[in-house]
Length: 78
Image (cartoon, rainbow, N blue to C red; front, top):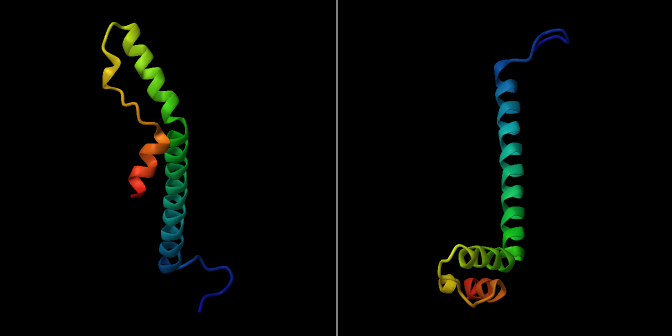
């Protein structure tokens, strides 16, 4: 057993380093889930913007689907 003034041993340092890594991973996962949710909510608008830009540039926007993002998400659940 160490006294109050002794530095932490190597095992405690490893545990804290691993704990910090897990915390960072949890934060990254939460941010990724939020990004997916936001993209799902605004995907119709993004699709319209890309289709409009394609038409303005003289291309064919027929490659865009007519299915809404809500229908696409429901299809994924089935």
